[in-house]
Length: 157
Image (cartoon, rainbow, N blue to C red; front, side, top):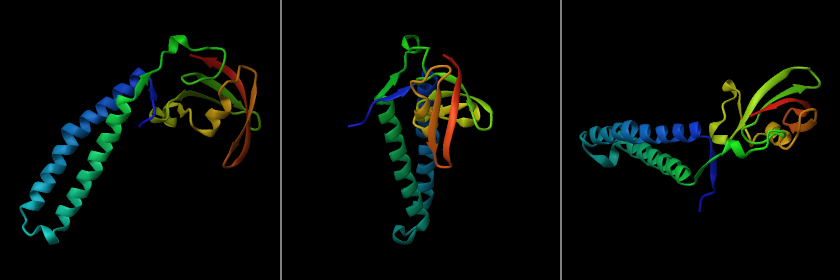
């Protein structure tokens, strides 16, 4: 049985678009590769055929997992969330107390994380350390490189 996965509306739409692409573009492409490999003769010694069948199996597994995520998806209702503390979907500005560098991230479900776009997975060590904190609080967070201390500067929704 799969666990519930939380998404923003944007994240769930992207997931559905990804599934659609895999089914309508990638699946026919692999079917064509299998057909072309089959036309080359003896399947018992046909490496192209074996590779295409393996790719098909991997694709079907990926489609199945993504469809399972959609079946268990829940949209996060941002209107019912507390703005005074850091939670999922909070956009939080933090300051590294050692370097005084300031960063802003939106905490999102893991499937939607993209640091280049300022979206940090709520499952990351830094995000976990920030959860539940208020403006002015500090968070000491153990990361692979050691311990970091961040001050919460601002929280917006």
